[in-house]
Amino acid sequence: MTAPAHLQQQGLDGLTERAASAVYDLTTRGALGKFTEAASRVGFCQRPIRLAGRAMTVDTRTGEATSQYSSADAPLGVLLTRCGNRRESVCTSCSRVYARDTFEMIRCGLEGGKGVPERVAENPLAFVTVTAPSFGPVHSTRGGRTCHPRGNTTCPHGRSLSCTKTHLKDDPAVGSPICPDCYDYLGHVVWQYHAPELWRRAIQDVSRQLAARLGVPVSKVSKVVSRQYGRTAEMQARGAVHFHALFRLDGPLDEGIGAACGVGVDVMVDAIEAAFSRAQVQAPPTFEHDQSRVLRWGEQIDIRVVREGSRTDDPDAPITGEQVAAYLAKYSTKDTSLAVPDGAHVHRIKQTCAEVHEAAIRRAESRRAGEEVAVPVDSEGRDHYVLIGKWAKELGYRGHYSSKSRCYSVTYRTLRRRRARFQQVMQEETERAQRAGKPVDLAAVEEALLSQEDESETSVVIGVWEFVGVGWTNQGEVEIATAAAARAREYAQLRAGKQ
Image (cartoon, rainbow, N blue to C red; front, side, top):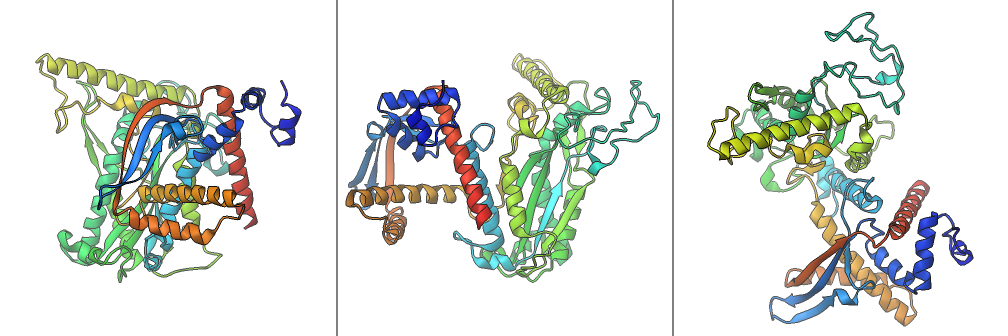
């Protein structure tokens, strides 16, 4: 089925047959306008959450209900909210919002804005990349060089350890082990599972290293300097996570975010390198006859100075804060399934996660039966690996893909609340302007936003909501939302290119 003539005239001729059929069905039922209005309110999210219920805003000073809302008043009779998924392969629209929020979170920590003082732009800044250790040789692009030119060397399993090919970036072999039987899949999974704890310990040690270099007790280092960071995680082609982070060195913590810092960037770089070089985690055994492992970071710890202590506008500089912010935002939405080629290597990692999980479940059952188990439990009495099966789809990694220190920048929650408030005010002012036949008064929008900030301190929203479902009612509507989100992304990229 091709799109009807009137839909082609509206620029919808690029839709698939199923999406065009859904548009035609909505049009014949007179529901296209309501669908478009509802979908636009959630940014054409591909998997919106449907809720039914009501809410009211109450003035805490008087107890009076200042406004009420019911899902029955919504265009489709239910309240739609974004799914909020960060993965581009799951929801194009929400992943774009997540990437923009990540960019703003990182950028505000670089330059200030959105409540973050501009003085942060004057403090030392370094870009740090840390990786997982080696679990066995894997196929690699090696910058266009030969993969593994090792002559006639063979492994204990009789396989050649040499690969004379020059792999391209999209080669499915990239990241897979030279010999799957030699590759330490169990060590890979255990390291991946404890990577968040390894990061936490390294971050704590940065403060200790700073204290040692400044000659002050660790308990008082925050009165001299404070290290702040914004971080994202990314999956390498071999299925191991690595971290990119911006570290900023502020002055005394009690003087607020971005306090003037009199310590040079070299001191911070030295402290970071020392902390990540010596950080380690003692991982408990996965099986009864297994041994505990000492987990460390890989040998490649890349630290690049972005700013030595003052604002720089050199266009020839090798790296800038804006570039780093865009880079981190881009990879914050990267899906594991897109970063790692789906093949035997990925299936083996997931299978190893499942085997470790099943062993943990058996041990838990044995403990409940009163049997003695050699493998220790955590501080809460649970087996350390009882939840690893939950993270098999992330190849064992159970941490956040983006995070920050408390005083680095603005929070995701603040960004989302301000966006929701802006969208609500903009919608109300647009409807008021349409009724009056006049353009939107931007001054009125700004005034309403300021007044709502004052009201938010003296009002509370009370709601009763019931979960109805997830997603649109049919695949055709999903494709409409997907196409609309894709066009919005293309339009945004076009506008960015013209600026």
